[in-house]
Length: 567
Image (cartoon, rainbow, N blue to C red; front, side, top):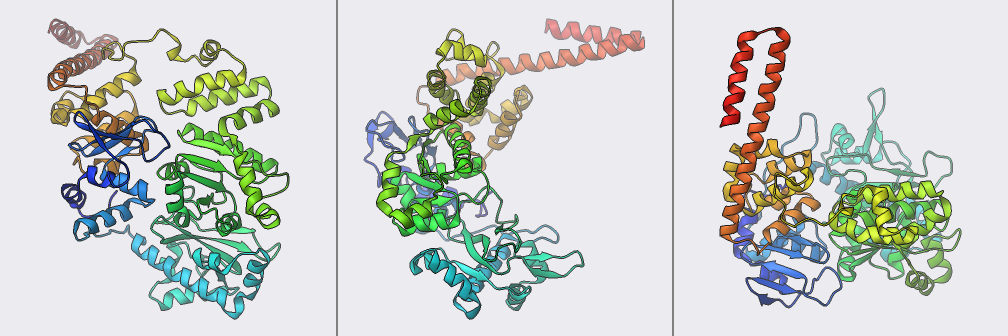
């Protein structure tokens, strides 16, 4: 949820026109009530990018990029949401106002947590330059890392002492308990506090605003605990959400519309040192949907550059599957056996890696080849079913089904039959009647109406729209948009919900008369749904009355059932 004062975003939208901001990046031309242009978020020549000045939204029919003025500026500039709001507010001459933070009892606020991490980052950087940091400086030199890279990524050193950072933070007003809840200090079973990172090379992890939110630490002594140690979860850091080097790479990524995604901290540093500025890394875990979602706001394609060994190839398979099913393009850069990004660059230079990138394999081709060579036919089919099951939209399913069928040597009809795909049957009219459509499509039609015609929200609630929706996700979406300020509603939606919302808002083929006609159908459907629910309840009461031998109650319920059916 936004921490900005209510009304700030609406004020930005009142002062800045979305078409003026977007027009800085693409040449817009009028088509009816819309403005269109080639999409700035993916490579194309046809004008699939549409802007609705009246509604304040944009939508690309090619890559499904969508949002409002703030989402556009965030994505095109490689910023996070708060940074985009502040930049646009500054441009519009609006002072920044934030809601006061409230801490849970015994907790630590985001502001306190960020302050503690900023102090820790400076402490670690100074320790790297001091006498105690000599071993870390020697390691950095052996890895061939330039001083500019060390400075740009703010590398540091955690001294060997148990209390050095703890005491430094306390001297700057950060108490033991606050430092522990910020993930910088640990607490023993006896209740004493000690530094979490000790005698480790420190890699600060930053958010898209450049604020340090966590640390990774590499031990330089064999056998002394885990080789890598990362921060625990805190109010400002959730594992699986951030990517190492994303802050430094964000502008290059946004410009190139692609990213080189690798595994290790040093791999990222080497890529940047050798001129691959659009590079970042996963943080010690398998790639997550949240990380892919974060990348999708900046790029259209992810090039995986994982280690050239069995573990790296398996990681490439899992990651390519994750990326493709989220709707991004993906390629896999195949490194020589036993090599990683850093070793290729240090041994053979930039040209060798450029050559390998130029020969990158399409992500789906890589997945199909890998599973075909390493799995039994039954396992391949199971993998394919799992892949299709992760596709979130009918559009993605339609795109991948024929490609999977070809890759597996099946006809599309056979493949659809194997998957029990409901789309295998005869095509249906685009505008299905609510009463005869399947539950998932019915939910989408009901919610699409609610998005396009917010003036009916109160009536929809009174008629029980929430009860008529069949999925928890649909009910959550309805409760989010009900009565919401149209200027701030997108902040509350996830990526899939946002695309659906904007796509509905961008429809220009629904007239007011057609909307009134659709309202008649929706309201009648909801009334019939309420009647069915009431009859079901009455019939259940009738069944219980008969079991209990309550003759008077049975007569009363029979009369009510007959009355409802006649009504």
